Length: 307
View 1: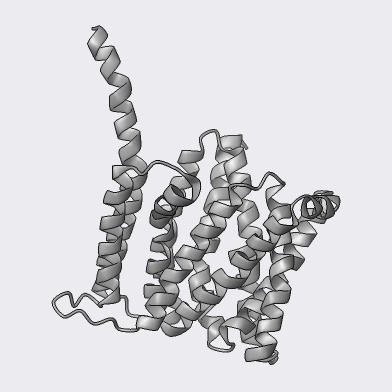
View 2 (view 1 turned 180 degrees about the vertical axis):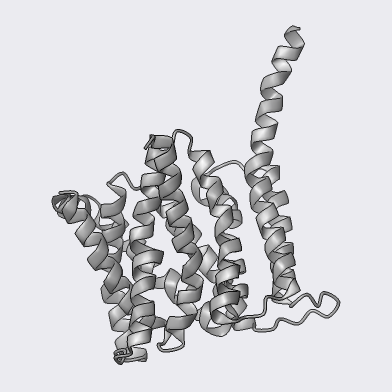
């Protein structure tokens, strides 16, 4: 198979798996608390990532990378998996899956805004325009489409969902300083995060009881939200000739997720979810396409002037 075709196979496999995890979150949370789910999921992910790193012959990098930058990995482990997934799973516990899913996708809009003060990057007008559209979609979802009477249906759930986007952005901003192997770095973050998750769980929820359905769903989350799917996505990006062509596949994920939520969980998808999610996806598309269009126009202008 050609590398370009193989990249799409990896990318589509990753997107398809990511599209199922919102449903798996809800199934697992019907049996466990957010911290109990996180404990099983992180433990499963550590085993899976450890097996991949061992198969790649990179176990020696764990000690080398951590010894070189211990504080860095303490930061990443605190943010992901600990704080990010605590907030995300709490949001899924309190909100319908369709709402938590849609709100979580605004992280890509927030990331360039946070990069301005934290990374010193320039603020683009397209980022502000996209943010305005995206958070209009958030407002529609948060109010259930009742725009004339501002009344949040579940303020705590909404806050947790939006807090998760901030934490995820902070993780990626911190991660821009990572110079090590990506899979090894992720495993180190999860190895550091696991004791934090375990201690907090024991102090609050206690150990999870044996429940075949709950454990299966939680292990599925660990493998296909946190572990193996990340590796598939990395392989897609490395194999692709153009990263942008693979990155656009991510737009399929929320649409497919809504389908799984409706079919498996039986949630009736609200019109406010469709409208709000459409605004968020429009904002994401404009955020990517408008700078490219502006760049092409700028490149074409000198040619026209010469003519």
